[in-house]
Length: 331
Image 1 (cartoon, rainbow, N blue to C red):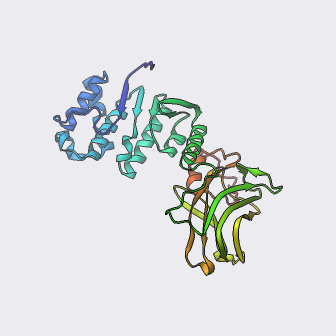
Image 2: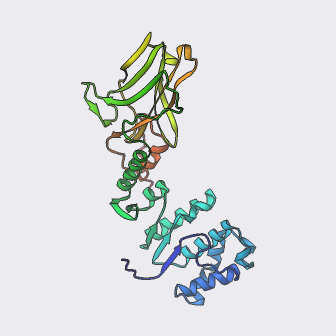
Image 3: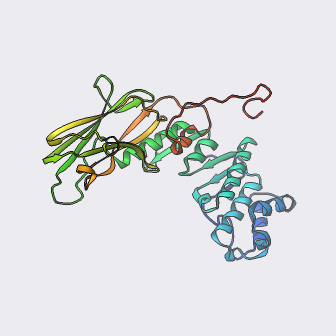
């Protein structure tokens, strides 16, 4: 059930609110009248709408001659500049170029700061985290979480990762032929040997590789990596580099890779694992993701602390030094 007070502007898909047989100019006037504005109000905002859309002289051409990008530009510009009390925006913004998307985000921020209501449906985690004070996570049409934008974004990312990989799963062999060596599972342990599902940033971590060798394998080179589905493996500890290979492995067993400190930002990560043959010749187990784990901890207070961490997952200690003559927070 939805209760609405005031005018509603919407950009649900490319071309929303635009009539293909009318010109861009005529569509601006029509949309404004639908929203309840007078002709004078529409004329007063007309130049600003056209400038923002960037379609120039095409404003006097029929909308059916516009590209999808031009329709998007005009549709959003009209919806945002006719001062709606509630602005509904769906994923349509993904069609626009980077410059236009930036202007749209800035305009939506202005509407929110001016007291308007923005309802944004998106898979852009950065837009949700930076624009929305409240977010709702839907799964199969049901609300599974309703809360601050940052908390919902974190939960969405965690669920997305776990949906791709079952904890500790055993990957199926790529062929029907029995491999010489299999990775049974990957387990995580603290410094006391206790098995973990999540770890704390900057604390020790032991990654234990459980394997099954169907025949004696001489000097296999194991590799462990951290990564995710967006970046791939962004770090690794490999016997191909350090040369610490076992002489021979056979039967069922395990080996450990100990990390003295885990400099990762709090969120979900994949553990990658692969095995090469003696001298690095031949792939016994392809270097692929084998499980998901979570790095727990408090996030910084910034507006995009969650989504920025997707791009820069490794935590490097730093400190800002701001001269006394410069005030903080940009003020």
